[in-house]
Image (cartoon, rainbow, N blue to C red; front, side, top):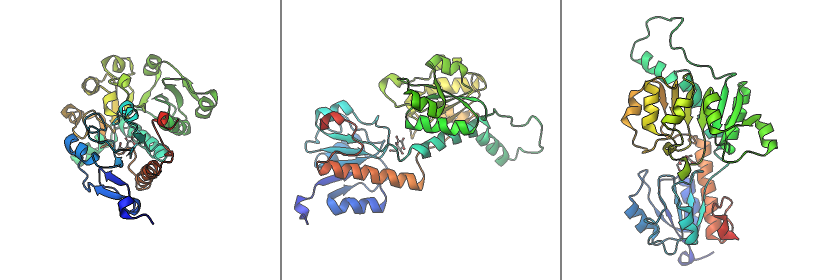
Length: 329
Ligand code: 8YV
């Protein structure tokens, strides 16, 4: 067995499950931030300065500042599928492998998209708050009416793995699926999802409900703003399970207050965990605290996959979910 002197050094940026820590301690010297509070960029850069590998989450920004002293870093493994917290170009320039956790969270996150869609369109949160506040005196024919999900048209923005999983759920609800994506999908996938490719504008105008599942790249910043919300149906629900910055929250609050759209379901926020106070004031919105992948099984699987990636990189093997594949060529 290798002596502890020869073990690689790694930094674990956030509290993880004990079985993950055990796996890591068996192969490495571990510097562990056992808190659920992210470190400041200055502290993060200090902790990255002396390690060969790091296990991080979507809350740790890996950029010029935090990498400034990371001269021996070989790999950064994200416990998330989205990697907008990584400066991939810089990591590649610095010869540092970057990895993420796709596949294991696809169905769990797609379930969350559907949950928010149904809860928002059927006014579940609003109804519950109203009931808890003691307002329910009588059943009424026109009380708490929402919008149908079944047999409606869903517009999926971003037809990657999670978008496709949402489309398959939609089919079981008798829905028509239209989608917009940077590229049209191969015919066999379109057939599998019974999904029709449309332009962004056509999707916004035609869909009864809109689901945002695209990656947060600079071009997608405020991809949904005042103009886009104005194109949507006044009966439509907007769901965002991707990243907060994709939606202009001021425009969304205005649209919800003025019935430009019917309702919204959000799992992600531009300044999360700080929530725009205006979002807390509108009743026709369902707000979740970024829990798209948060089931016991999935979060455990994400952690283990991130550790698999980290260990592979430290052992000079190609990590299963390498993002900057150029480094391997
Ligand atoms: C993570 C997510 O829980 O995987 C993602 O991209 O948004 C969530 O599943 C979150 O980013 C924490 O890392």
